[in-house]
Image (cartoon, rainbow, N blue to C red; front, side):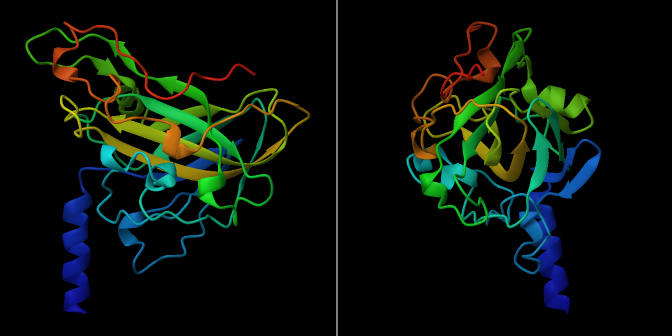
Length: 249
């Protein structure tokens, strides 16, 4: 018992700096997120979010961008439940915490499962970007970063709103929500990717079926939006969003 307590305390200390999506809300209906920090002893969390193995609440490193880890985080596996959402409506993603030093863009993607998301091979998913938010205002200089999307997350009570496109074809999709932290991204290999995936069942009468790409093709580790100094953004005011353009549907 003492060993278990020490393990829990050790994990809590290690993960205190980063967060995870603890709740998903659609039209007033709440769904459980997934806490990877307790995953080893509580693997079934009755969650619509994909479980993943980053018990340290850590990140996917740039040298893993060409593999399957970047899809839904390290050692991810399919969620068995869905959040139901009508096309054109909002999903509210509630993080438990996020460090204010970890600035960068926030992305939202969708990928059709073409069947059940609970059993789809994540390497077969083709993601298209539905929203992105990056640099909001420049820093004052002197090494002080400006305002970025995670600052809005913090000021909004750790809630992030994602609108599902109006004309999206009904079906089962994986919603891929991601924060790219740039606080150490001033050189190649320093960026930190925090993707999380959620199963959603989209209803409506839309017909749009945008094409997408595998997660392993979303980014390259030397893209100027992946290698970027937030501490010099007043001298480099044009931030280039990595990944594909947002679809217009």
